[in-house]
Length: 183
Image (cartoon, rainbow, N blue to C red):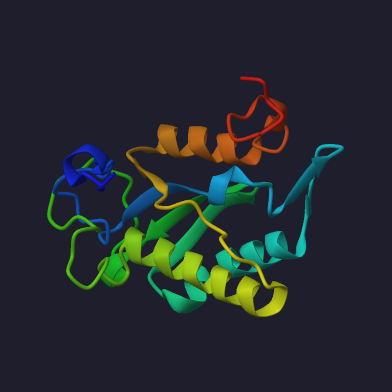
């Protein structure tokens, strides 16, 4: 059966007309391919990383080394996904936590996402982790296509998301991403 573009077209979850390279705080979730627990396991309330999980952690912490306008907030590497807060500070402007107002979406550009946008940062992160895992560990498919992002609009939301990230390991048994969770 031929792939029908209209039936199989993915609908973007990105906020229309939002410039994902502008100053702001963004909650990101990136999931492994087929939700496989490639990055480790939760044991006695701790994340025990595999070598792949350690690489994912190392590369997450290195994001600001490659994108000088980025500051990282809370993050956690889980067995099959990563949650993190990325804050973009463009052109020396303080990082506002605001609602949506303007410009360029990160996808649909002929040459890929805009450099320094959330799409560009997540794409570079996924690519660097994949390359290193393939080079050092002979890993194949690492990531599920795409990622989840949420624009953090105010300090209360930032605090709530920060707490969610920090408690993710403690709540692994209830997590929808946990393959052992009967849902």
